[in-house]
Image (cartoon, rainbow, N blue to C red):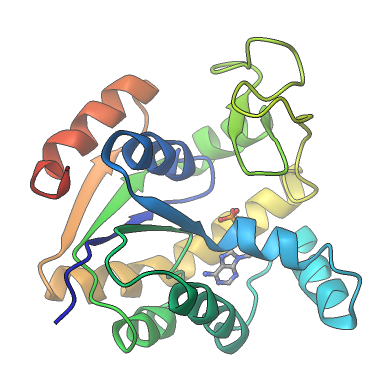
Amino acid sequence: METRKVLLFMGPQGSGKGTQAQLFARRHGYRILSTGDILRKEAMKGTELATQISNTMNEGGLISDELIFKVLRNHINELPKTENLILDGFPRTEKQAVQLDSVIDVTCTIYILLSVEEAVQRISGRVQCPEGHTYNTISAPPTEKDICDVDGLTLSQRKDDNEDAVRHRLAIHEKEIANVLGHYRTQQKLFTIHGDATIDEVSQEIEAKLAPYAN
Ligand code: AMP
């Protein structure tokens, strides 16, 4: 019987799921596994597989369910079984949700809603450091321009944060997400939250919903 808590933070690109995952994790001692961050590191390795991953990501497409699950499972298996986890960016398809159930007990899921136009606008201002700490040059800038507040690393825009790739990612998201949400609704593990408020307001709402899982 698993004792750790596993929370999923889901939402369209730009909904703030990564930022909210970081806030909750810092406050309550969870480890974050972000499949986007894991893949960005994987893509820098200089292998043929790395090139394939990098091409798919830059176009805004999805990595195959088999590959991403294998990569994620390896990361999960390396962690102590008692460590509380937040998954950011996984699952993105119903198949991934089913695959996840075979390796881990999901405690609860949060879905952050955001309109396509708001998402496109937000992402165009997004910058992040190589460790995945994210800022928005308009709504949540770093203290010093282009420098990460947390680790001092240089901030840059992701290659897949251009408008074409963003719209492509959002279209895929729209197509896949209903079945993923259905999966967790059936299990009575789904909370939905509106993402078009300030970071603090969304965070407060998440804290209220996830209060039973705060340490
Ligand atoms: P993110 O940082 O969550 O926006 O993810 C960036 C990119 O990584 C996505 O656009 C996909 O190309 C890839 N990716 C991340 N998570 C997954 C996943 N669960 N399944 C397939 N591809 C993923």
